[in-house]
Length: 441
Image (cartoon, helix red, strand yellow):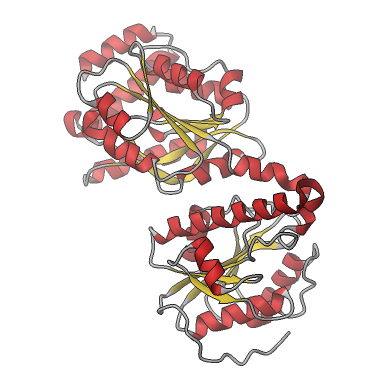
């Protein structure tokens, strides 16, 4: 390991958090060489280009959420070529050193020398690294010395530090299955506290290419609406932050500007008879995506929702998922509702429709879609989903309108929802339940 004498060079303006991305220019015959037997030189270079741009998209999403400097440490090109390719909003530096350990050590030393307090480094080979995961890495560094993203091949896809622990890069058998184990052993020997992020897979060999397909699968966002002009614009604006999407708004006969707003935002609009279960089934039938996300018209998705949904649905045993719930409004009672939803969802795997349920299209077809009931369609759907496997809860929250709680009161809405569930379990007809619900509200 080279002992770096860190010279004074022009780095980005000091920001306490630094995200360092190590990559190379997509040069023919030099990029992703282990994929060349399957893709050819041009195909491997193109695959590399797409993965780098995908990683940078997630990094930029993170920068919208927290103050952050993004540095690209590169090889195989000039700074001008990298800037022309990836844009001028990033800081570029040629990699320094003979092996990966040298390059990581130098970049870390330079970052802390320039005054940053937390550094997270990653490559561009793991497409399931998203802005949510990157944010988690930075937040964990508030309590931990080191954060590691373990890779299935025995290495790591990410390392985060809150001090320049350069010894973590010494004596490592790089490009072997021992990298993670050796790094953890060194951290323990020095008494460092470290945290492990979820295990993820890199794309190194042709057998890994399905990982890319899963990470970039088209996500169809299906929004059933009826007179949602007051909220729909905010909902669609949040959806548009995602990538590899199609957006389908299924209108049940709105009399306001709902359809015009949906068209303005470029959504595919389908008009049908009202009924949320029916409308969602109509949208799913029209969807072309491998993944489906059902979103209420008055609910906003979190930044990074798309990558997070793909990562969760790629987990073994997960058949569907939903987000945590946050309700608009300042009342402490709303916080209690959110707390209750959190534990109901996690302990009983029982999210409701306002939490934006998502799953694979094949799974949706397997359970026959939503029951076209006047009420309780989401409850019945989740029950069917739970029989197939685990229903996961994403570590991020949707923001839903608080208008029901503001109009009726938190206690009344909560009691009304619970009465609907009890009534349904006791065998009361959904038609009768819907009539009661309309009367009581």
